[in-house]
Length: 328
Image 1 (cartoon, rainbow, N blue to C red):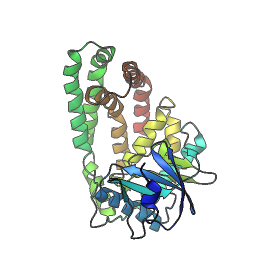
Image 2 (cartoon, rainbow, N blue to C red):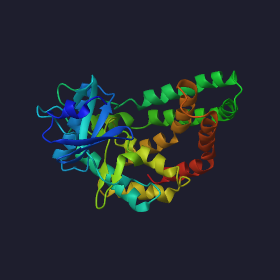
Image 3 (cartoon, one colour):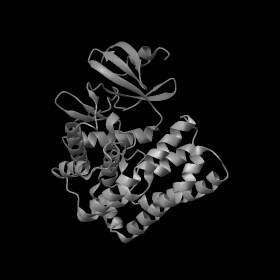
Image 4 (tube, one colour):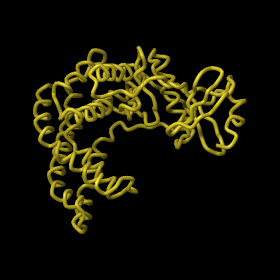
């Protein structure tokens, strides 16, 4: 990066000692400790929404986050060579291990604390608000329609992935149709109205690499996708990622739910929506969508392997969903 230390030297109240590329960001050694300098694809208005959300959490005593370090004039972002960057403190620690029970317990509690502290968020007037409340039926319908469209695409091709997709897509379409039918029969819209009134937002990318386990504390980082949404989105995301590592073990799911509920309640209606979200073939759609519609970043065999993994989950997922339904 061209003269980056010179570019930012006068913007912050610390001295720049060294800047080192690391993963997809830069570690900046300063007179006030290590910082993270990260290039953003988000617009300034979007960054202001995220900044406001983080500051709201901080004011509500949820402080285990990567707050933006503002410049001398109060901006949470800077321009370097016409690109937008943000600065945060570097959090020492390791990524959360979803195979480690203690880590899962900490992550579940952390998520509940985040949702509790998010209540009442009022975004800055000049930000771009990200609001996904009420959009779940639309997303379900759109993704189910895509599965049907890709069935026609796959039928004209002859790769191993195509054959595998054709053989199982009808099963997953039926699962999606069942989820939509149940969602239409639920109190989803009422939950959306309540969440909108309460001003709750989600992290929207609550996964192991964004959860940092330090010596005595656990932190959540990278709020790039945070938005107004039912808290169930984050819970479902955490459950899916953990359950795939333990063959959809109901006991493991119970650990996440019970630890979360020690801090933040989940109502009967919310449990029902959570069950519907887990029922919808999200992973099958995601793999197929990435294979057929995106620029392929994996080898053919990797896509086929990932689709097979989703198919192999069926024998564990079906009994899990049957038992999970009885929990509420």
